[in-house]
Length: 211
Image (tube, rainbow, N blue to C red; front, side):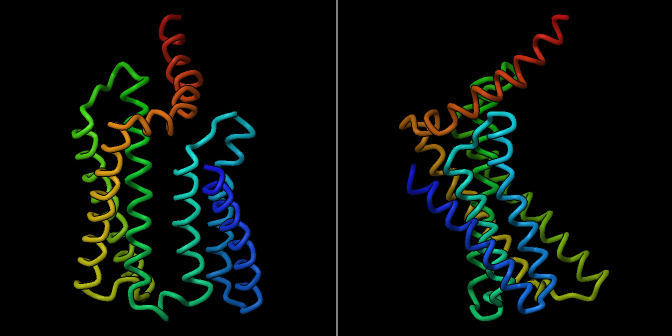
């Protein structure tokens, strides 16, 4: 766990360096994207300090890793330099979406009376959610290309490859998530976040309904 947290902070530090590299190269779009990425990866730290809600370290690491891959690809031109870089970026991003979905569903299953799901049903929902978010992203790229004449999409083959990688990432995390539930690692990973959500959100709603 400590090594994962250390890696997360290391990637955040490198992202800060990439921001200045983007400014030095006068690549304002890449620099802005890097700045946005830095703001997003610092949100878990802000939430922890402000509301005493800590994300699982695996989830925080995945958020940082996904954004690091994206911003480094933009600043350093890795998307153009390596043919499979975009494929790898899509896979990691889809794993992040799937992990977020699995964590959210599992916490609701444990702490909220309104949801009770079998672990395999959770896995199915996670895969479908990840695929759906992949479709939303492809539609976004298509709209941007239509409006601004960009080339975010390189054709049908590129779109289908991205959707396939989104599906693979969702299935990959779904399999891991089921194993984590079986071994108790999911409980361990989501314990602190689950208790915080239960105390600050779910129980608060119950008290307000009683009033």
